[in-house]
Amino acid sequence: MSLNKAPKNHVFYRNQNWIYPRIESGEGVYLYGEGGKEYIDACSGSAVANIGHGNAEIAQFAKEQIERVAFTHLSRWTVDTIEKCAEKVCEWAPGDLNHVYFVSGGSESTETAIKMARQYYVERDGKESKKWKVISKWNSFHGNTLGALSMTGIPGRRNIYEPMLIDFPKIPQFYHYRNPWNCQTLEETSIKAAEALEEEIIKQGAENICAFISEPVVGSAVPGVHPTKIYFDKVREICNRYDILFIMDEVMAGFGRTGKKFASDHYDVVPDIITCAKGMSSGYTPMGAAICSEKVFDTIMVQGSGNFIHGHTYASNPLSCGIGLKVLEIIEREGILQNAAEQGEYFGERMEQLYKYPIIGDVRGKGLMWGIEFVQDRDTKEPFDPSVNLKGKFTVNCLEEGVVPYPGGGSAGNGKGDDTLLAPPINITRKELTEMMDRLERAIDKTSKQVL
Ligand SMILES: Cc1ncc(COP(=O)(O)O)c(C=O)c1O
Image 1: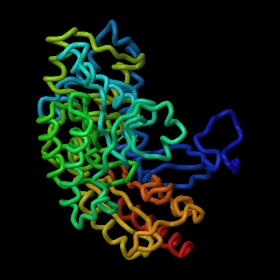
Image 2: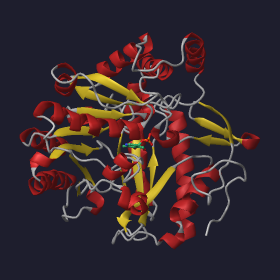
Image 3: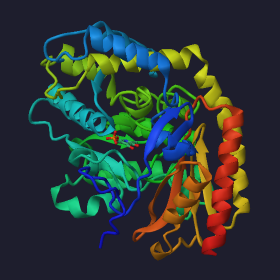
């Protein structure tokens, strides 16, 4: 039964059991609520507001672009902002990922990528190609639209929609803390997780698989979880050997979040398609993209029919592309990538110190994208019973302290497990980050005392 705490108005909120404090404004890493209550946005919304809130340069640019031209349809026109943004995105992207299909968000980007993968094989091998299945992983998130949800490996998000989903094969995640192979090191887990891909391909038959999708650093499913380099070395090799496209889902980790342009760069891996969104426009406009290799583009668009059977009204929106380009220019001009890498070092050190609180089971992450997993018993890794409402209590304590986390859960199985993502704006200063961590520690300490 709903607790009906949400404001009573005409909005269909996501969760009627939450109180929804009102935000009046934002500036830099800060959000300001009613009565001037100050919050440090420790999650950038959901790893979105990478260059912080209230950027005056973007506001000015958006005004001018709206006055010039806000909307054109991709089926008929091209606009300078679209072309320049695509050029900049490809400059940032690894390898020969030289072609950008712009959309409006993360789910659209992953849906676009799997349709691109399917059409790639149809163009190359003919309509009789059986290659359509996408292998993904449990404990992964690729979006909530039905195609994207079919790849997502979070039972709590899937269960009631199961009859409507595509039955894509799932393999285990490189989730070392709760790995199914009893591996003792992250390297071992990474190897086992990659071997699981080959086993699944053999089981399904490579002739039925068009793509494998993975996050480089996991977002909301098991925040901050990542493998060692060997995982993506092996994945790349396996995908090549079995003629399967490799899609890297950088929706959360891309565009500087982990201290590099794309998180793929940490592993020196070049996927066939990168999906991205969020930090790409830093939340100043809804935006996403699928960035594909020369091989994929050439097969569909040059040697093939030349017509990608896909499209959305807001694909390649000239206003969004202009804003996205501005965001990337600001990141370059202000040395924000370098800042993310430097502050990420300090962030990691502070995160490792959290083990002094007994409810911390695991911390992991890269750059300015880290996750915390809470447990009742560190030795047994026993999660809290959902009736404790650990993440609810932690969130309220955080907000009281003036820091905004991105809590989640369910990774321990049977609906159990509490975690949080921490991903502040990547232009955060050392002073702000220190203050953020101090507030976070006070909230963890308070929560610890409440539940143990
Ligand atoms: C890795 C990943 N892929 C896809 C998505 C879906 O993006 P959106 O919510 O913009 O549809 C998300 C959202 O959090 C994500 O983290």
